[in-house]
Image (cartoon, rainbow, N blue to C red; front, side):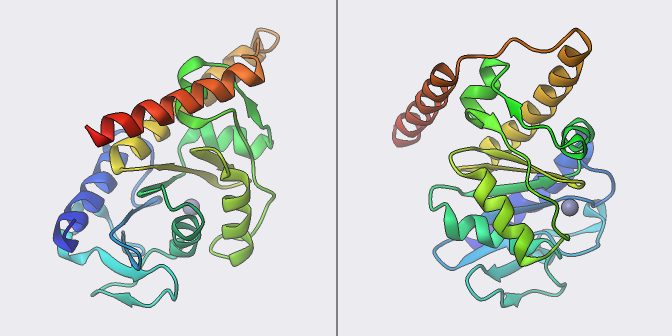
Length: 217
Ligand SMILES: [Zn+2]
């Protein structure tokens, strides 16, 4: 992928997050892995509607040096830590979506309760311990609780969703929001019936294998 193409995709994804109500203003951020060194991220504190693709920022996810007119999002270190830890991941979306944030604030791990959740997000959705935004400690917590999964809740803050490409990360963000809403609704009815843990792992593995096969075709 050329840097220009990646910048288009990152800005497009930022605008789509706004349109779908997964973030308000620019409080959320998006990144795409370009190669073994660079990622493209949204800039810090700018409104996506007023930005141009060339204003997206190239960041070296090993050193955090960047190339761009604007500074990268202040949460770039979290994106970088994920790209370093998860070679199969191509895109990261960080949101403050309401239902996911609500569950994150309550500090509740979401077990496998919906089949598409288990397929796309993995066997459960974990919550990090509280750490200050933009800190290395938070990046570490996010990576640890995201292991083997495509979504994680950040205590008292929001969520991070990942995918092999931007579309997959986007679907993860949508499924996460729906799952958290369903989880809260089921709690009002006395609690959700769980999908057996082995079955949940199998569903996720099947999704990953099927996806790889389709990606190769
Ligand atoms: Zn945030």
